[in-house]
Image 1 (spheres, rainbow, N blue to C red):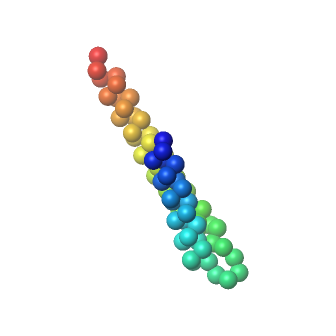
Image 2: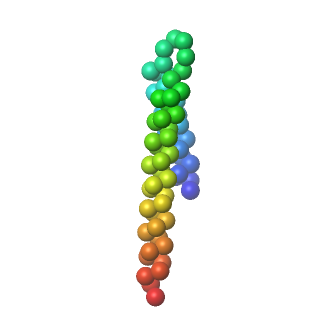
Image 3: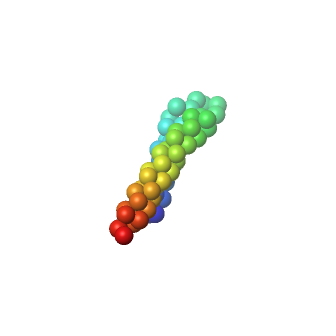
Length: 63
Protein backbone atom coordinates (compact mmCIF):
# COMPACT_ATOMS: atom_id res chain seq x y z
CA UNK A 1 0.00 0.00 0.00
CA UNK A 2 2.94 2.32 0.60
CA UNK A 3 4.08 1.97 -3.00
CA UNK A 4 0.56 2.88 -4.15
CA UNK A 5 0.56 6.07 -2.07
CA UNK A 6 4.07 7.07 -3.14
CA UNK A 7 3.25 6.60 -6.82
CA UNK A 8 -0.04 8.51 -6.48
CA UNK A 9 1.73 11.43 -4.79
CA UNK A 10 4.46 11.35 -7.44
CA UNK A 11 1.97 11.36 -10.32
CA UNK A 12 -0.08 14.11 -8.66
CA UNK A 13 3.02 16.31 -8.41
CA UNK A 14 4.05 15.43 -11.95
CA UNK A 15 0.66 16.20 -13.44
CA UNK A 16 0.48 19.45 -11.46
CA UNK A 17 3.91 20.41 -12.78
CA UNK A 18 2.96 19.62 -16.38
CA UNK A 19 -0.26 21.59 -16.00
CA UNK A 20 1.67 24.51 -14.56
CA UNK A 21 4.30 24.44 -17.30
CA UNK A 22 1.74 24.26 -20.11
CA UNK A 23 -0.63 26.85 -18.68
CA UNK A 24 -0.68 30.38 -19.89
CA UNK A 25 -0.62 33.55 -17.86
CA UNK A 26 -4.39 33.62 -17.44
CA UNK A 27 -5.33 30.22 -16.03
CA UNK A 28 -4.01 26.84 -14.92
CA UNK A 29 -4.49 23.87 -17.30
CA UNK A 30 -6.82 21.91 -15.01
CA UNK A 31 -8.23 19.62 -17.73
CA UNK A 32 -4.74 18.54 -18.77
CA UNK A 33 -3.48 18.05 -15.22
CA UNK A 34 -6.57 16.16 -14.10
CA UNK A 35 -6.54 14.05 -17.27
CA UNK A 36 -2.93 13.02 -16.70
CA UNK A 37 -3.65 12.26 -13.06
CA UNK A 38 -6.71 10.24 -14.06
CA UNK A 39 -4.65 8.12 -16.44
CA UNK A 40 -2.05 7.53 -13.72
CA UNK A 41 -4.74 6.65 -11.18
CA UNK A 42 -6.39 4.22 -13.60
CA UNK A 43 -3.02 2.58 -14.30
CA UNK A 44 -2.29 2.14 -10.62
CA UNK A 45 -5.76 0.71 -10.02
CA UNK A 46 -5.26 -1.83 -12.82
CA UNK A 47 -1.86 -2.73 -11.41
CA UNK A 48 -3.36 -3.34 -7.95
CA UNK A 49 -6.26 -5.34 -9.42
CA UNK A 50 -3.90 -7.60 -11.41
CA UNK A 51 -1.65 -8.06 -8.39
CA UNK A 52 -4.58 -8.94 -6.13
CA UNK A 53 -6.00 -11.32 -8.73
CA UNK A 54 -2.67 -13.13 -9.07
CA UNK A 55 -2.35 -13.46 -5.29
CA UNK A 56 -5.86 -14.87 -5.05
CA UNK A 57 -5.15 -17.38 -7.82
CA UNK A 58 -1.92 -18.55 -6.19
CA UNK A 59 -3.61 -18.93 -2.84
CA UNK A 60 -6.47 -21.03 -4.15
CA UNK A 61 -4.25 -23.34 -6.23
CA UNK A 62 -2.33 -24.67 -3.21
CA UNK A 63 -4.83 -27.31 -2.11
